[in-house]
Image (cartoon, rainbow, N blue to C red):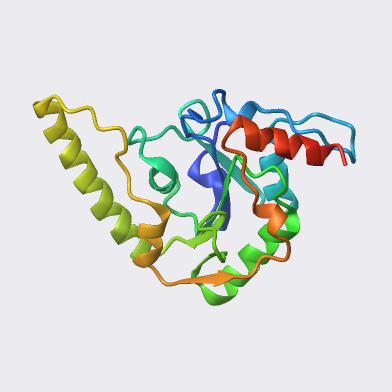
Length: 213
């Protein structure tokens, strides 16, 4: 785990690897799956690979969202938006976020660069058509309002559930719900393969077969 302060992060674009999911479908921590690199003959974890792709795309500062990493979830089991909320709560001065889930074994630095540059140019939340994440997200008043409302309601419901003895599992809104409330645009991906995600052992096996080609 890396130690960060607002001063070291600065006010530019902050890279965020989302690694806080339960990985229940995979059966093990997706962040620690080993990805074969034919270029270097190394075996980086998916977390290391994801951080490297963000770095190679021009991002200087990168944090990992998840209870075992740099930014623990402030609202447990609140999904990707909960991770975004936690990151911006810790680093409110970040001008924008470039958000990458840890389960995209074929993502490229070029794809992430495209996303960021087009997002910076338009100052809109930017994602690939058909995929709400990876996501370039400006830190603006629209985002702040959505998160404040979503997690004020979430915390209120959590208290009510506690009194009623309820054990609700999902406590956060979806990325799709967030995008509906902020200026956004979808861009075309150069290569659909870069957005293949590995949520299950079967999908991971498919990915591993491609690593060997």
